[in-house]
Each structure stands twice: as C-alpha cells, then as structure tokens.
Amino acid sequence: MATKAMKPIKQVPPRTLSEQEKQARIMQFLQQKREAFAVNILNGLCTNMGKDATNADAKAMVDLSVEMADRLIKKLYPVEEESK
Image 1 (tube, one colour):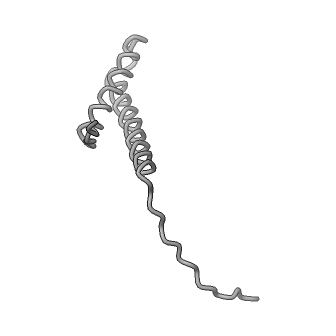
Image 2 (tube, rainbow, N blue to C red; image 1 turned 90 degrees about the vertical axis):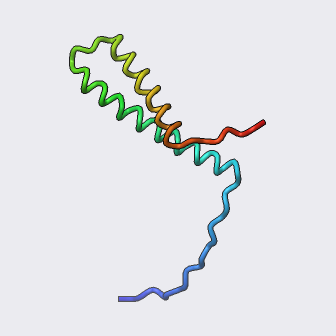
Image 3 (cartoon, helix red, strand yellow; image 1 turned 60 degrees about the horizontal axis):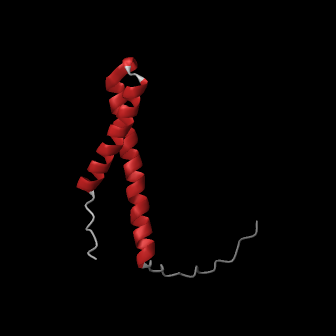
C-alpha cells in the first residue's frame, strides 16, 4: 500500500472581523436566541392551557410568548444603545 507524502499544513491566521460583521453576528445570535426562547415559552403555555384552548387563546399565547422572549433577551443580553 502506498503512503502519501506528509506535507506540513500551512497555518492561516484567522482574519479579523469588521465592525459590520461583528454586529451582524451579534444580531444573528440574538435572533436565534429570541426564536428559541419564544418557541419554548409557547410550548409551556400550550402545555398548561391544555386542549381547551380556542383560536383566540392561541393567538394570545403566541403574542405573549414573543413578548416574554423579547423581555428575556433584554434582561439576559443587555445591549448598550449607541448615542447619536
């Protein structure tokens, strides 16, 4: 069986992110967290409500879960407002 020649792997230094790329990654992270929180909160609300929930109850639970997720994001990940 033939063996491959062992060549050293060239190390590539990590490139630094621009300020816009950093902001985009932060926003992506927060958006994913918001979605995960809202889905988990909605799951809990639906579980507690049971099978007796009406269509109006479902809409209210969705709105409440998103509102709660937003509040949780603001508490857990405070973002300083940029002064104008």
